[in-house]
Image (cartoon, rainbow, N blue to C red; front, side):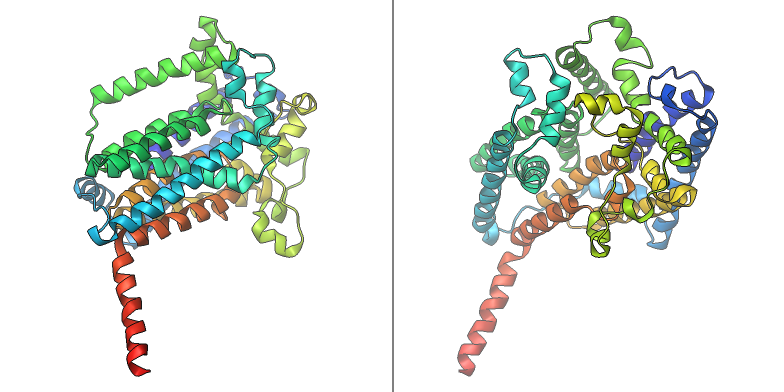
Length: 431
């Protein structure tokens, strides 16, 4: 979790691009929309503070809890997986199958409530206006967003991970069948809107699951193989989805896949600094989660959406403008300026370190492994969403609550049931 955050979310997709922007050699279309050049340097300085203060905060929090990252992670990797207690086995399988059925139905519901499913249109050969269809698939969804976001998008891949761990641990047909079914629907929900990153992250989740469950040991040869396969898949997706065929587009640092990784995610951060320093006033409380500010009758405003409307109004008019998501510092600055940036770094770093320590110290079961893998992949993705998602995230909360119920069934159902029955018997004796 910590390595993915620091080396991917910060170093590769933020700091390298920030350095190019600071040096003025980015030649990127988003940065050309900036009005004040001094924010190239200011933005890079803030990113440098992030690279230092974030791990320093995690180190302090770890010391406060007596946490030794290297020793505890090594112990976790070699710890055996504890599957459900035999007496709980049947109850857990029934509960899991019911939850899996709900997730599969949620995926079907999502597809039915999406007016035009981009992946189906692509397979049918309708490649015109794919960009608009992708936006419509997200913003034009006519169903319940909580059913889509929680039970279809979030829960289906997690359940497939749980089924996968049970399948490789028990080798039972029921778990193999459940995993195969959930795997198909996980791939479908990860690709239905033609977003490129979800399917890559799902594959990484499966790899991490094998590592955490002691069924795969990574080495440089395997890692190189995965990177080559991922690169080939990414190139194919760019050709199929965006029609990019020029070799120069793939090799240039400011276009194609490379530009998407090192510049596309960090450029909106510099635009935030420029815009909210001169063109727009700070959001302050309006940028906080709707759950919090709803009590004060204030409507939430997301800076990423405001930036798209302010910087690329022509895309909004054409219906192809979504949001300009970037590193969480941008939303923190949009709310409370430079103070918000420093406070957000310390707060987010502390929260992530606590989550990381908690998972390494929990009992290692298939449910806990799945939740650990989920947060290992989704926390880095949320870091380029916004800081308010770390203040209140309904998807994370609901997913954790559902899986906590599964964890209780998995490990403690017999104990709880015996305790309740003993209480009933005592009442009968007294009567």
